[in-house]
Image (cartoon, rainbow, N blue to C red; front, side, top):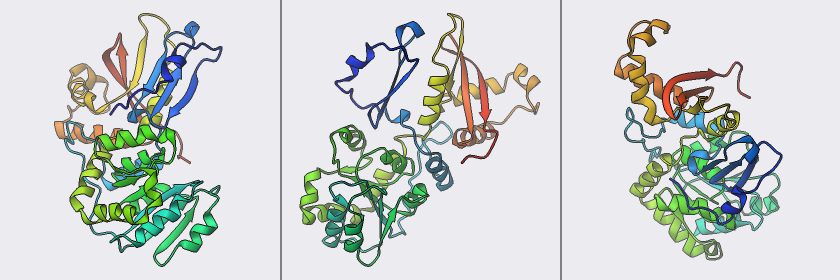
Length: 332
């Protein structure tokens, strides 16, 4: 999924600097890296695959069995269980107290479950939200396990900020209310593929109308299933690894230089053919040729492991080999 350009992008591409790389956040769905002409090429990352997502969210998604489609996993499973009643509102700093508006909207909706409200420590209306929180509403401030809270919910009402991609990674059905101009890209990306129901911020001033929209999501299991599948297909949670690898390999050493890139699901069949070659087995830990099912299981487990990076070695843009990097210590 590739959102449209920002109008400011052409102005940034032509700019030079003595710095080796500029990491610039134009929107929460775009990450732009610019290297000055003296250093070589210009690298641009744009789209949902480039968004850095917390490793905890990736690990939680793996534990829940949420995964993107590949040749061995042709359809991403739906995270929605249908049996929970939890719902979460993600308010972050929430300068306009949208949280209170959503709580009032819930009172006019058909929703009858529990509510988890998440706010940042800098949110100016925490006291007011706690006063408004009725029975079944829990207010969390700076929770240490955000991924766990997301995973415990069945749908979310929130703003389309960067945390939207953590929710998408977990296959979370969402109602999104953009409250800032820089959130429009995210909202459009989610709405275009049906990963969320996007509503105008003006609806925060109409609790009955917002409550009606919440009821529509609550009452339609199929809608939640469709949003869950679409959201899970939006990102694979490896944006931080792609970004790190792009920075680490951003300088070319010559026309014949090899390059590294993160392995993608489209590399599975090529890697399987590579693993079946006699010369590969000669230097492998096990001489036996892996079965198709065994290779598929290894490939999926490797992509899902937040402590491993499976990379493809390329020569002049053509696949030439693979390389696996494993973390030496525990992740903190």
